[in-house]
Amino acid sequence: GAAAAPPAATAAEAAAAAAAEPLVLPPPTAKLSAPLAVVLARMWDTAETHFREGARRVFRALREERALVSTHLMDVRVQFHDFLRRPDDKQPKLATFLQAFNSLPEDMRFEDSTKAELHLRCEELRHELWLETEEREAAARDR
Image (cartoon, rainbow, N blue to C red; front, side, top):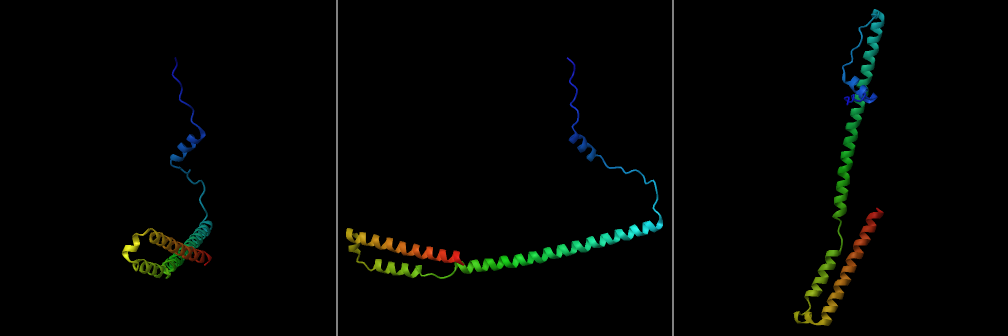
């Protein structure tokens, strides 16, 4: 059989090949008049100056915004740290519970009725601590 011909290049492949080749401009066919060249040079200088000034304003605004965001982030971190460190009365409740628990004579701790009472007290303490935690969470969400 005859050898298969290579597939024809697609439009995208042709465009990619054309883009890869350096662009060669034709030589100028007419020269600019001196007054027109002066006007175009001034216009170019003006456009360049406006671009530079605009870029400077944008970069200055970006620096100012970055400083504001950085300051705000630090304030938020400090407020969050203070929020986490706010006092509560869970530790005194636990200390009171432990003192009452440890005040029981050791031989009573092994009686079933005493064990049941201690389990009930533990459950009540757990419930109190969770209620306080949920109240603080709700108060924090309402802030």
